[in-house]
Image 1 (cartoon, helix red, strand yellow):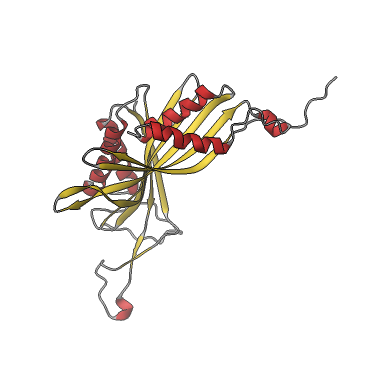
Image 2 (cartoon, one colour):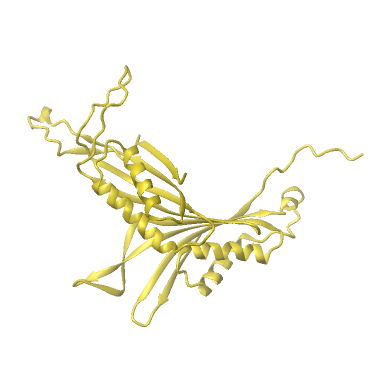
Length: 285
């Protein structure tokens, strides 16, 4: 009788991370630039390489990297979602031992230089640390696509309050009817079965978040987060669910009275840590 193995490999996955590429799309009268970073994770029939060192079914991670560059040369990169989907489907079609491919893309954004009110055809400025993101998880039966925004840094100097919260022996935070509201918005949203116009929806969600942040009189970060998500779902019927993450980047009012100066709610100390972190997920009923 063969004895049972002493250990079980209950899950395995491997892939290539941070494959960076820049693609120039050359049009007759202007050029476009796409700068993306790709993470690939494959699951499937790879247990033997773990258990016995048999690599006969292993697709080398260096080959995954090369695949990204080769397929990017043949793909229009009209949206990072479509390219991520193309990559995931390629791995499933090409290698029968793969059961699931997860492809994550992050796009570093470039804005055209504007000169005398006109966009320059081939000169750009960086959008900073803001990123557009996409995650595609694909099997041979199903595909899920998620889009997102990362590090959308915003700040407003008024129209933000925080009061009426629990007060007990551990509470030192004063209530305020006027404070700085600063955060780095991160949002992800999932779609239904049909593939929508990813670029149009991305632009709509981003614009809604900026509009709500700027115009909404906030009684809490939570309230503003909910309003952003509600408005996004109302405007984009292809979105089934949206998750928003908003760290509260505190700005502490500086007490100037020790220096013989009046404290007029004008001088603040920005802090990185610790910070409040507010998250919420909204979906359709």
